[in-house]
Image 1 (cartoon, rainbow, N blue to C red):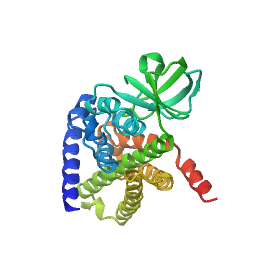
Image 2: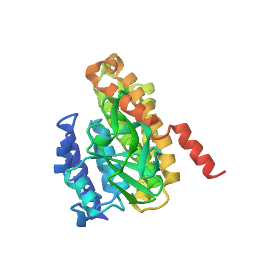
Image 3: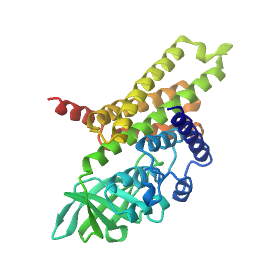
Length: 321
């Protein structure tokens, strides 16, 4: 256990160093770092790790509010290709082909793919798209469909509208991974939001220790202490929920319940915490230079993507109805 803990600490430290260098990280940097192949089997040129290790990277990406394609082109792509030939998984690991996953239901008639999807992560600039269809995953060259960038409030993510009109897939990989991919997407956003919340709490505590009013640090004021304590409590609950969801996915268990719980709580908490961070930074928190707006916008988008907190709670209620 200690060996894994040391490895995880080192992986997180290296990720933090890489992500701290630039707010936008190129796909080639992710590939060179070995992150794209973390969950790819060794037989396909990957590291043969689990979603637990991928979650460590996702958490650091959230902490840095980093703009990159890891979410859609690695974390989701590997899940969609879990039953695919090794050459497709190898393409993810070595970065020779960047994928994007379309989770909206497209129809297949006479071997042709038709449909429209909104807000597809990392589809802009992808080489191939993976469509979750009945009975499998349809692999389609990006040039065969229409991919249009969708402007959103969070500039650290790239989302797109994808339209297919009678497209013949390159291949269809038999798989029943649709629910697993959707669960992974919700947990991925929860992990990212946890990183956002942790970064905002750290930044806020550092600031209130340094900022003085009336001859004393504002962190000594009771109202500020209570606000920071509330942020920490929300984060501690999020950590446990996220850990349970990540473990369920890594073990290949039914992750529907822990995923919905982690997404509904953590993504809401991250928005609240980023908002409190902006308030506790005072006037400077509302300036462009503070950078807090990047985290607040990212947290807000995370809350909406792949099911709002209300949608996730509805999933839970239906599960136990």
